[in-house]
Image (cartoon, rainbow, N blue to C red; front, side, top):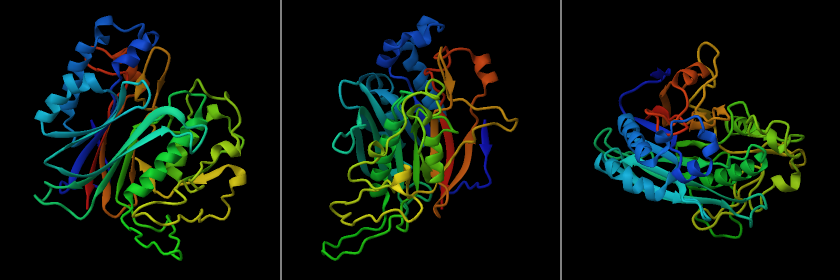
Length: 382
């Protein structure tokens, strides 16, 4: 069921889905999470058919997928999507992992302009950045709405942050690195000057393409991490690392965040690169907010992002996007540039409440191919 928003227009409308499809190797490595599931529902041959059916029925113009086991997906699901008219971009995790992120889009709706792979195993930036999680950015030019391309490029960012509920410090580092990459990638104003006296550009005042940022953040809607994304600023002073993501297993656990660990080499408190190379040859100035002192573990970012989804339904019941034997949660998210002049949210597809989950039972099951629920939203470009 779709929940319409205040904006609606068939002209320039497109749909986007984010979905953690549960990599089969991760499922097999964590079978204790599915001990109540019917065993046949966990077999990849069965899951692949259900996932393929789900994706084809959703028929989204853009898919952002996480935990994509590259070999399995390309052999069992991708051919049907290509036949339906999709083009795919992949980024596999670093290290021994077999899964990663993928962004797929309809070729009759978008022209592929550019992509960027982001790896979070970057100990040159921070000792916290030692995990193999990744992100994927693509820049698309819409077509098909008026049978011609437009002047507005659309930036899609897809990621899967670290799961560990007690290591919110790592998640913040991963997120801030990703925000710095998005800031570079989404800029529409280029600085071509190589003069030693080149002006410093305030990243808060630059123009950016409309952005949709989504994925499995492994963080709850009310958590400090998600509030940071939506508010554009946060102060983590006095928080434990287990409190950052709001996951039940991490609350009041971990250790207090330290200033020297929160800071990233080459990235300012505004979550932008201090020095940018190539066509982005400008120094990003420091925070525009004088009260945002690094001494108080205060950070910010340059984007104005809103969630496409509320955290509760009209009756005050919490929404959930994943369920296993040990836990349920709302850890998958779609954020968008809600103040951008060229992008509007049109509708979002209803999520599940705890009552719905109790009715459905454990999943993956005979209908759902993953332990997550897909989030879908409709937008339109002006």
